[in-house]
Image 1 (cartoon, rainbow, N blue to C red):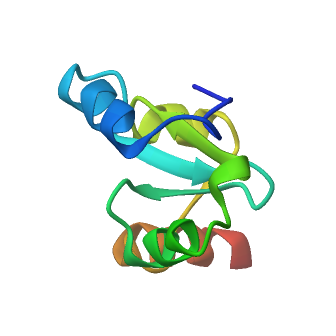
Image 2 (image 1 turned 45 degrees about the vertical axis):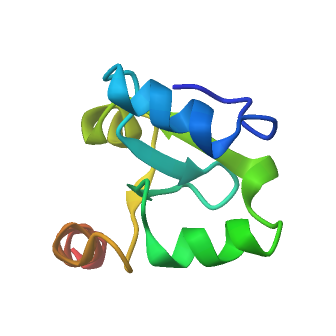
Length: 88
């Protein structure tokens, strides 16, 4: 997990993605992970929010192993599965 990303530019994230080092992004305070192109996260980043809490993961397995849950916007099926597991 790459924690300090507040000074990481979109170009640098694209390079990390191209190298296979990251494929998912997340919010460290909310403990949510999702796709790097998530529309919800992108809106907050465009407003200048979210970036100071952004984390990057190599894959979904890494995000889950760090206690993050799937995003309800960009990972609807994974979110539904996670949510139903919380009700049991």
